[in-house]
Length: 190
Image (cartoon, rainbow, N blue to C red; front, side, top):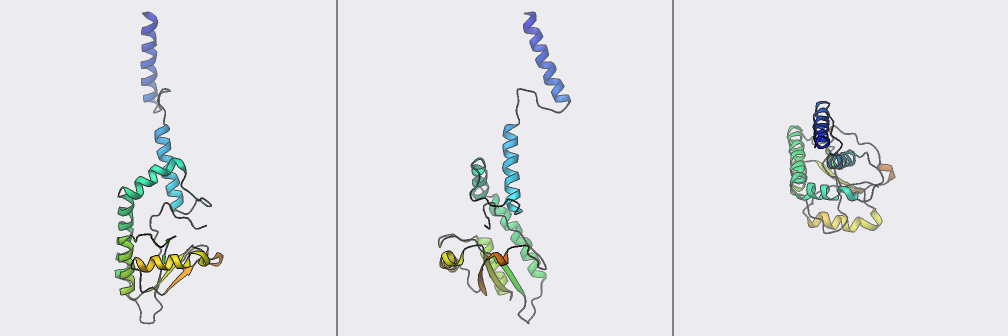
């Protein structure tokens, strides 16, 4: 009985002591929190274009990315950024010199990718505002040009000035009067 009481006392002492110093007791792990943080860190690094050379979402991130993309948060994030873009566009006066351009990144890999409603609305607003809209893509022109253009047309993207298929010469930093980054945790320019 004394041994049992001593073990309970030690157990409580360790629990209280670990709480007082802000650490977890040995019987609790941070694995669930660490995994969530690792997934969020990976997503942020991809969004900031700091992860290079990845071709698939890491297995431990699949559920997180699926939930983000299909659970409403992705759509909410896109809508928020598009709203910021539309506020900026409302302040811009397009000159009659036809030199005002807007570059949008297109990412369709096949001719059956659905449009993102907020982006289609933004695209139409840009065209209607008088911007020359250029669509740029990291796709290979030889193999994916037709599929990309077919998809753009089938989803309502009409009236753009040109689709530019990115080559090595186009890689690097983008400089413009203003740059907006839309959320896309699965997008990678090889």
